[in-house]
Each structure stands twice: as structure tokens, then as C-alpha cells.
Amino acid sequence: MPGKAAMSVVLVTGAASGIGAATAREAVRRGHRVALADIDLAGATRLADRLGPAACAIPLDIRDQDAWEEAFDAVAARLGPVEVLVNNAGIIHTGYARQLSLEQHRHMVEVNLLGPMTGTLTALPRMRAQGHGHIITVCSMSAFLPLSGYTTYGATKHGLRAFHHSVAIEERGGPVTFSIIHPPGTRTPMLEQEMADPSAVITFAEKPLTPEKVASVIVDAIVKKPVEVVHPAVGGRVQRVAGVFPRLMRFVIPRVAAMAERRSRSIAPATAVVRERGDNNR
Image (tube, rainbow, N blue to C red; front, side):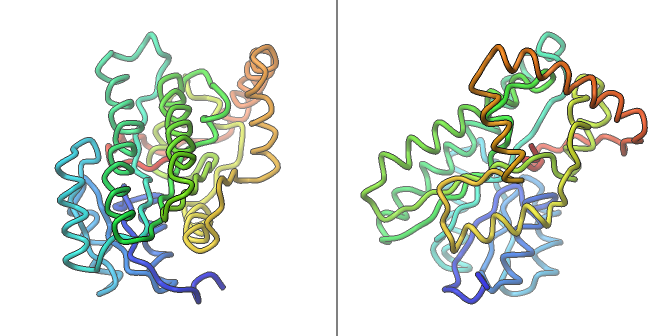
């Protein structure tokens, strides 16, 4: 079992709920020491208290460079130097591009793209100095396939994947390793928000995973260190191929959306909740 390997100090962002919380729980269960970082410190603290002495809560607004430095210092003082960074936190504002304000577009760029970039650039010199480290980026299947209703969200994920792989190539001779995970729709508060918005009807095209299933893949990556994981594997490969061909995308996506709309009529979405700490779920 992966948990029998050497244990690590893991920093998980967006850890107060959803995928981040499930990842923290699974990592502690397998014996890792885990820092739960979130803008929602109260939520992260409640979970850390339940997880016991192997966990601690750290306040973190991932848009703030100084907050990143303070978070790494705090984790080092309480658990030891960060050996694994899980860049998980993300947000979405649902709606067609023309319906969203410029502030909402900018908010997604700052959190979903600049936030993980800042975390990675904070982690790199520290991990290089200590001689080892692993950076896991939780991205999205929308990094491969543009979707209506997900314009800027998808753009941030395209950019995040490019940044992650570019840095990994630059650092290929160094002591830091890199993995990127692309989950499909996952049952989190952010997915509930999408399900309540008609512009995001394509959410209903696939059966969502549980946060625990995605968390298991993420924690496996701490030990296995895959370069890139799409999940589920078969469906993910199909989406990656479709994303390469613009004409195919423009033919297929409207038909998938129509199917999803029919399916949505039989599913009653939960109340939508917008959470900045949010969890990447596509």
C-alpha cells in the first residue's frame, strides 16, 4: 500500500472542504503529516482538530505572496519543512463570458492561475535548498477541452497546465518532482453551484466522482510521482483527443450539452454555495 512508504510533510491548499479536505484526511490516514491551508481558517481548524496531532491548520490566501512565505514558515515550525505541496484551491463564477463582470473574470485568474503559480514559485527555492520536494497540481479536465459556461475557468486551467509542465521541464535536472492531476466533475460545493446554473448544464454530462476518490489519486501521487493523471482514464483520453481538433469540439460539445440538458431535468441540484476556498472539481 502506498501509505507504507516514507512519510512526508504535506501542505494542502483549499483544505477546509471538498477535495482538499478529503485529501488531508486520506494523507493523515496513510501516515503523512498534513498542513491544512485555507482562507477559511475556522473550517480548516475544525478538520485539523479532528485529524489529531499529525495535522495543523494554516491561514492562506493563495493570491498573497507574503502569505505563502508565512505559511511555509509556519508549517516548518509546527510539522517540519514542506516536502509535498498540493496546489488544490480554486474557484468558479458560473455564467457565459458576456454575463460575468471583469472583476469575476479577474478573480478566477488570480485564484486559479496566479495562486498556484505563486505557491509553486514559493516552494521551489525551499525544496531545492533541502534537496528534495514534490509539487502536485490539481487541475481539471477543462484544461484540455474548452466548454461553454466555463470560459475563464477553462482558460485558467489551460494556463495552469502549461505553467506546471514548463516549470517541470526547466527543473528536470533538479531535486523537485512534479505531478498534475485532472479530475472530472466531483461532488463539492462548487459542483453544486455549477449544477444550479443553466449556463453550466454540461456538468450533467458525466457522473461526478466523490472527493474521496479524487483524494485517493492525489495521495497515491505523493509516492508514485506520476507526470500526469487524467481520471477516469478512458473518458479523460477521449476528452484530450477531442480538445486537439477545434472543428470536432464545435461539433461535439453542443450535442453533449443537449444530452446533459435532458439529463439535468431528472436531477434536482442542491443549493449553490460560492466559496473562495473552493475545490477544483473539473
